[in-house]
Structure formats: C-alpha cells, structure tokens
Image 1: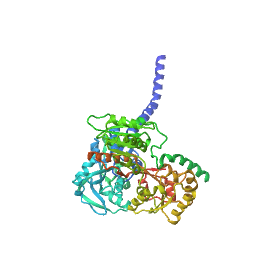
Image 2 (image 1 turned 30 degrees about the vertical axis):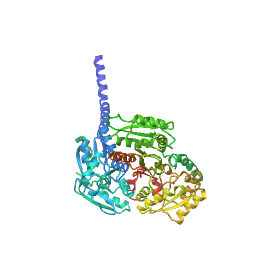
Image 3 (image 1 turned 60 degrees about the horizontal axis):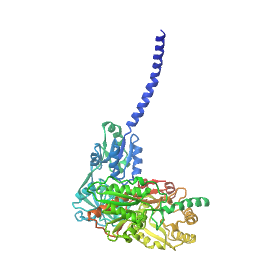
Image 4 (image 1 turned 180 degrees about the vertical axis):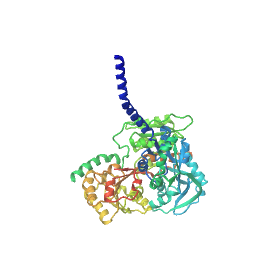
Length: 246
Length: 342
C-alpha cells in the first residue's frame, strides 16, 4: 500500500506538471518556429535608391522577413553562396543562377522584361560606332557577363567602364569620360531631372533584360512572404524597378 | 556658445590632419593605425595566372579598397599583397618585386608612392605598369612615377553639388569657395567642371597664411556681395585651423545659416552645424573603378596612357539631417540619395 500510495503521489506530481511541460514545449517550439518562419531575403536590384534606404523601406514593409540589400553584384553573389538565404529578389536570370526557383515575377508596364537604352550628351548616338569607344554600364552581372550583354546589345565591342551605381554613370558623362552610357530606359527621366546636361536617348531594339523576380528556397517560404511582397506599395516597387508582382 | 565652438573645433582640428592634409595622403595620415594587417590575406595562387603586386598600408579605408579591388582582380590574376608601414624601405619594395615578378604594380596611398619612387630611381629599366589609388593630389605627383596612371582621390566638386541639388530644397546654383592661392589651378579646374552642370563657382582667394580677418572678409564677400547659395569647404588645413573654425567659420555660419558641403565626414557634426552634407569617396566602388582601369590596360597588352589621372566616379553622401531639414528643407525622396544620416 505504501508503495502504491507513493506511486500515486508520483503520478499526481507528473500529472500536475504536464501543463507546465506542455507550456515549456510550446514556448520552445514557438521560438524555433519563429526563427524558422522569418526567412532571410537578400536583394540586389539596379536602382537609384541607396541600398541602406531601400533596405529600410523593405524591412518596414516585410516584417516577416530579414531583409538585406546589396549594392554590388559581387557582394550579393558571395553572400548568397556563403549564407544560402531562404529568398532573393534579383533579376530573373540572377535568381536562376543562384539556384533558387523564381516564384514571383516583377512586371513593369505589363511586361516582364525591360528595355535598355544609350544616353549621350547633346545628340543621339549610333550604337554601331561605339566599337572600342568608352561606354559606361552598371556592373549588374559581373565583369564578363555585363560586358557580353553590352556588346550583344550594341552589336560591337566597346571599352566598357563598369560602375557600381546608376548615379556613377552620370559622372562618366559629366567628366566626358564616356561617349555614352548604357542603362535601363526607366532611369532616363530620373537622370535627365538630376542633371543639367542635355541627355539624349537612343533606343536599342534588341537590348532587354528580365525584370526582378523573387526566388524562394521552398514552398513554405513562398507561402510565408509572397503575399507581403505582392502587397508592396508603389513607391517601393518603383525603387525595385517594377510596378507589380505576379 | 564660445565654449561650444572651442570644444568642438578642438576636436575637429585633432581629427582634421587625418583627413584634410593637402600634402600628405588622406589615408597615411590616419595615425590611428589599426591592427588589421591580418585582414589583407591573399587567396591561394593559381598556376598559370600572372601576378599583380599591391603595396598598401593597413588602415580601415585602404582595406575597403583592397578588398573590393583584389576581389575583382582575382578573377584573372594572382594577387600578392604587401602591407607597408613606416619601416618599409625602397629596398624592401625591390625585394618584393623581384620575388613576386608582377605584370602590374598597384600603389595605394601617398606613403607607398614615396617609397616606390625611391625604388624606381634605381630601377629605371623596370617598365612594369604602375597604378596609383587613394593618393592625394595625384595629378601633382603622377609625373614623378614612371609608367604610371591612376585615379584621383579628391571628390570632384561637381559630384558634391549635384548631390546637394538633389537633396536640398534651397537653390544650389552659385557655389562659394574660399581658397588659398596655392589652390588656384585646382579651383579653376573645378569651376570648369561645375559649369558643365550649370553651377557657377564664386570664389574668394586668400594668401598662404590667412588671418581671421582675411577669412572673415572672404566669407563676407561670398555671402553678402556675391550672394552664394551654398559653400563648398575645401580640404585645406590652413583654412580649417582651430582658431579659424572657432572664431570665423562657426560664428559666421551661425549668424547667416548657409548650406555647406564638406568632403570629410569629421566636419559633419550635428552638435556644431558646420557641414550640412559630407560627400566623400566611396572606397568600395573605387575598387571596381580601379579594377576596371587595370583590366582595360590588360586588354591593351599593358599599354597605359602615362600620367593620365581619372576622376573618381562614386561617392557616399552623409547628411546632418535635422539641421538640413530645419534650415534648408529637404526634397521629397531626398533620403533615397543619402547613405548615412547623422
């Protein structure tokens, strides 16, 4: 009897502890879950907005993700390779190259690609005359890929001057250090507004590049943040170079 | 108020020699040498790739440039970095060059250039192309190094003013600058570049050793007679001496608030309201521009245009946001153009 009594007491103690243990388990699980459902979102886009400002905007709009914005392609690729984020926003070809599955595609003016143009000072420029001449472009894809893209778009091989930021392209024209700059068409009015140079656009019919897409490491991550990305406001989308996500 | 000026200007002047000296390099003067030599670690050399030698002092700023530059170049070359210090001699440089056998040599900072010139004086047949970065007033010294080219370190005024125009609500058209006669050619060249963006540079020149009265008169001329919209503060220690900052610059700007653009972050201090915007070199982006210059020379079989100095393309913009907003107003989306708010 004594033994039984003791066992009963033990069982009662265990029984009383169950809610406490359950609460502890739930708390631990929630913490783990909380960390697991806050995916890291790495961003590299060609934008006029400073990386720190874009990161602040995006972080505010996507509280469920840990956002990191990169201003240089090399830093982005290195970080993706070393840290394997759960999601990225970058041009679709970059998303694919880092082995993530594009789950949302940015759209601008109803299209999922954007045109590139040449800007030059005072008069338009014939792309076919730019072989061996200085042409500026943002280093969006690394030295070789950027160079290939520019050469393919122009139909000739220029002496490429790579820059990190769009605003640095304007400096090339201000210093007469380039005959033309090569950039997405959407930047033309912005540069024209911020400069007193007479910047003249030359269309390049074959020069297009996919717009940013969102790549996800898994369907769970996609479920967790895609609706927030789709709900980004117009100002943030504009900074990302899109007007909506599909 | 006077005590505040004195305290702040004292702290400024203590820091200024690190950033504003006109004859010494911007980075070599960073006296607080940081123990970061260990961060300048090259990757394993790959067989079949040519070597590029980088000579650099170890500071936080040179590390940012080195990391960006070596990261870019290591796609095609083995990078062999030699961290220099005040004990490095021309003979040490010679030993490293004989050992590394570089196809190109990179010199970072004026101190390294100085040592390398001594090496070159005894090795006139060495035709290895030399690329110089982060050296102050490179245009003045590039001719002293054989087979050399590089990128200037000073931020061109036109880049600073375009940032000011994009950020501040007030007009930025007439740009005032006080300078010493020794800077005449520099200021003339800057005025010419600014005119491309329709800025009008209004200047007041001073002698080699300006007094408080000279500076007061110069500022009075710019602010009240020439009616400038903005002041561009040149990096010249002689104009930023403790007594001039405390007794002339700060009281003048306190009495007649005027947007000021500086090119060293230390002059941007919200407690003082001296600099409104600091537009400074972007060292990481400079690394990309430098790599570009080296790759282009490589593509031309290492043929370089000797003594050619490119201008830096990329800058970072810091702002004393509260004071800028209060005194001059900020444009919509101004923060998109700002790297750091103080």
